[in-house]
Structure formats: C-alpha cells, structure tokens
Image (cartoon, rainbow, N blue to C red; front, side):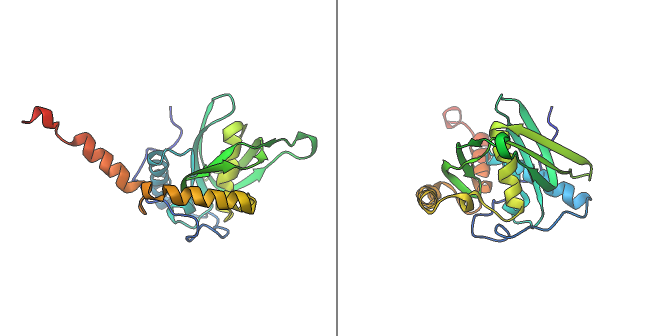
Length: 204
C-alpha cells in the first residue's frame, strides 16, 4: 500500500539553468492545504516522468521539499515526503563510494557515473509536519542524496568533472527532441488520447 498521497495534476518539469534550481530553497513553514496539493501534484509528476524522486524546485517551487518512491539495494520499496531535509552520510572507515550511473528528470534522458556514499539517512518532517527518518543503501541512498541536493540548489552535474559534465550535456542535447518543454505533460496527454481513440479496424 502506498504511503504517498493520491496523485494530483501532472506539472511541467523545470530544467537545469532555470529558477529556482540553483540556489538554496526556502524552508517549508506552512503545512496546510496548499502544501498538500503541491505534494500530490509532485507525486503525479514523478510518476508520469517515471522517476524515483522529485524535488519542489523541479516543478518551479522554491521550497525545501521532495517526494520519492525508490527501491534500496535489496529491492525493498521506500516512499515518502520530506520537508526541510537534513542529510547524514557515513564518515571515515564507514564511508564507501558507489560509482553507479545517475540521471535527473530536470536533464531528461542523460546519465553518467557519479560517485556518492553507498548509504544515507535523511531526517525532516512530512507534509503534515510530523517527523520522518529515511535511510538505506543502493539506489535509495543515491536518491536521498540527489533530492536533498536539489533543496540546496545543487544538481548532480555540479559534482562531476568538466569532462563528464560536458559528455552529459551532449547526451541531453541529442535526446532533447524526445522531451518537449512541458514534459511530461503533453506526452502523457498524447498517451491518454491514444488509449481512448476508437479502434479504426472496428469502426469501418
């Protein structure tokens, strides 16, 4: 059973280079209906884009907030909403790097290796201002770090060498025609239209 709120409306995803992607976002201080609607819309947008996490600034909202639905190393599924996240990472002998590939819905389609600690813990509050703690390894650890970075105005390209960043941008540019400016809104609407279109073979 999902622990995320029911999905709302799908929103266009903000791209790298746009506001408010590259500065420290504002803390969440109000936990009312407006925040609940934003969280629902973020869940819908994440699902439509087939992502495992999405931060508020990725839909153009300047708030320290993200949603996620992501497996850990063992395939166990974790879901949640985190406002005002605080990230904890292992240090010293406990710190081991995972050099797996990483991508971002705000630079859609492009992936490259990005070394990150293979375990992470995030603390914060949910959309109802209740304390939450999420921790884990594998893709979940990468997701928690990636989304917390977003709330701080950091994209994973900022963590890459110039060589890998240039390669990542080149791949994204090549794939750009597959991702219209309002993605994932119009592709989802087109899929819905196709699904509801009459079968011509049965209407001749």
